[in-house]
Image 1 (spheres, rainbow, N blue to C red):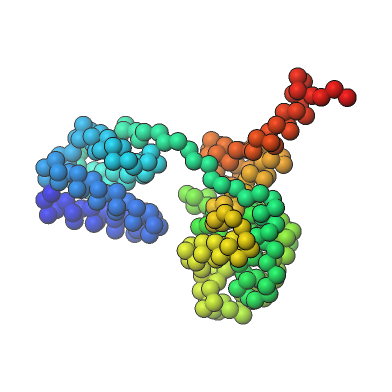
Image 2 (cartoon, one colour; image 1 turned 90 degrees about the horizontal axis):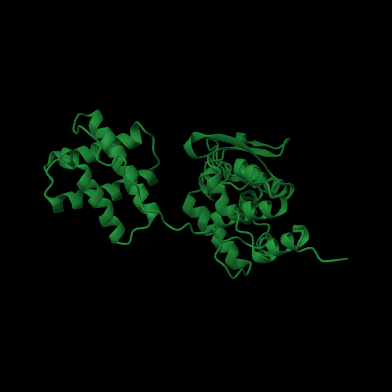
Length: 300
């Protein structure tokens, strides 16, 4: 491609961070996707971005599909390409967006794993009273009690916890704020952690969960600690934050059947997203069926 084209791409990535305020993770993902588009365009002999028409754009998506990329990854690549071309149109470097109207192939939804209630109890039976162990137990209890996303827990600041009402205010996807109840055992674990946190955190650090050095924890750090306790407590499955979030949703649905309520608690914009969490095990479904269906009820 012409020397101007890579510069336009670099300017777009800078625009994502400064004007759109996208996370570094999203910027990196967009950069990888658009690098793939650049390589593909080079192979077609496309010199400038405005030369890419809808037919070539569609062939790029077909190329991604044939290469074995999942539907979700192709959807993200489409999103990156559409955003890039909207930017190019704004900068008058393109006249139209060739990716408008192109859809990614559907991929099979994978159900995340959920712990059993017994596994959750075993995971939380942490007897160690060291400061970091108290922190880790509070983290795991909060994940399971309130169904938080990893990013929501990482971004949690002290003022966001209302100890009187036992709820936490979190900022979810799209900057949307929601209030989520915090269970009794989670509040107890938090109460044991906060005095330790006050000793460890720097004076200018508002983060709820901090490292040994007193600074906000990273996503990777939280993932490693949760995984560590899963192994330490003898669980035979890999434990990570999303497993606890999914266990929260699954167990709540099994007990209540209130899909809309769980949708609100999880912060899902669409109920179809929440329905992924409704995979109740067959024995549980069979018990409900036997108890409720007129033709299945056992005679007294």
